[in-house]
Length: 233
Image (cartoon, rainbow, N blue to C red; front, side, top):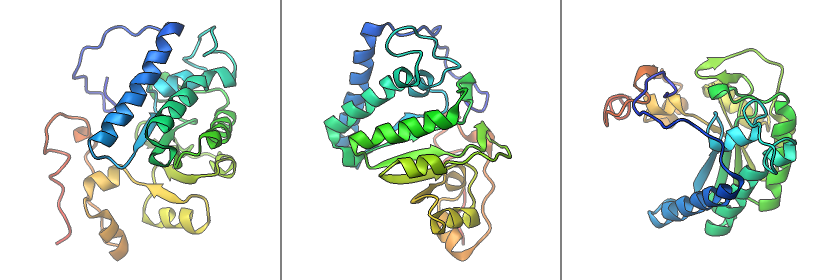
């Protein structure tokens, strides 16, 4: 099931990885990173957010393993950190970032103590000296919905020693404020950038933004929803 509710592929029933299978999956991440660099990419971002595999290992709502990859916070973060180490060793830590969403509950993948999870990962990542950590704001709990919350990424910001990126519902003004206040080193834009190919220019001029069409986010058409949004005249 895609994030906008459209199902294009019939997936096999999920199952828990056997302990002895996990090193091969870690190696798959390593090979994927090497292939990206060989293809001309400057670096890679490990997707450790939003209910995908790396996120599933971290979140106690879906990780019910009883081996060294389940149970304690340290065990649940073991696989993500093994992936980070393998990728950093393969292509260089200065080419690696990771995206994390400790507060999110995408695909039923949530955690009972997201603050502790986020801080643990931020601190643990320092060992590998990766280029950046990219955290999703606590207000983005589910797809496309921003909720009021008093939770903050500040403890993670303080814990991580590299570049700290934030994402999740930002516009022009609050994005600027996040930088000037020291809340983040960079602000990441997704939906607005997709709908506005000249987003930096529009922000510079404080020009109106194209409205994005969520229904076209994950369709296979190579043009609709991807390259058909207009530039400023």
